[in-house]
Image (tube, rainbow, N blue to C red; front, side, top):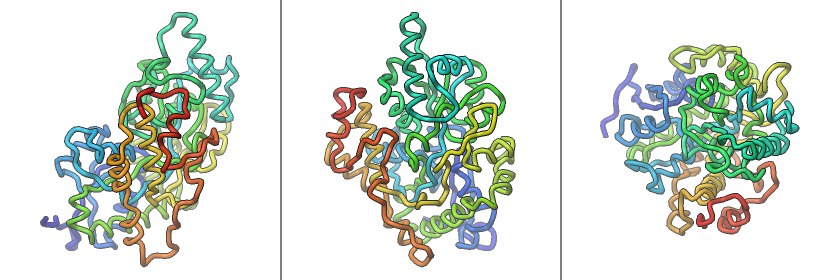
Length: 398
């Protein structure tokens, strides 16, 4: 592998991203010279859809990418076209998604007891009641958008619906739409709601076409989502450049985490070549507040963390939870070989080795790293029992 040379002799790494706030550490690593200081030059390529981004990884147009954590796992399981062989040496923050519905759906939810507290149980019960009401009236199922079949958005939305007894794909329709097109799809009434990363939920609320019902931080306080996916061959053949990339992005994530940098970060991300949305909308999400609609936005504890609570550490129990959801919804089989492939995808060893000389050191996962709003415990060594305990699931999934 011949390294591409950038300015000042720095080696160029091509990294893809989707216009979402959790791409910020990659953007800041380039814009504020964290990458240059580590001896690399980042060439960032913006994509619209996760499918296109994954395909560019597959054909080696990209060395690494801001990518959906479950999509990286699905690649390792051979569930995607042209499996490239990805490893995940770093997470890109936690809990930055919203479940947002149209104003028409909101009216129905309010009738059934929903409010602006973002409480996941209250919102899910109201949603289930609305679904039942529509079914009794002979109306078509509501259509909800996710960004990819292998995404945290899919599994968070399905978990929330399933808790209330709503069957994804049966009682409601799930459709795939790229993140940046979801607000427009809601505005044009092509969909009734979506689960997508910020700033798109906040944008829908700010222009009056959507209302945030709950967030990923309410469903799971420190829920994982995007990761830095690196081609396995690249990580093996260029360990020094891979480590430099991890250090640069981690430093950038720490910069993004600091409250005093939020205004500057919002201004940067609002650029047309990056996210291209108003800085005040971006600022709302960066302030860890999800504005449902009119009025003062309530605080969302744990929402959109870039580096706090070891948000950059790729946790294998998180990977196992995503795999459990794949099994629950019939996307993957629970086999010893698949479990091994999932565990080998996440590489906390690469992350910790790259940051070995930095301080403070990241910590090992805590016992309750997988803690959702319903309090159901998850043991990565007992996936069959976990999945089998859900009433709403694909019955041959285990």
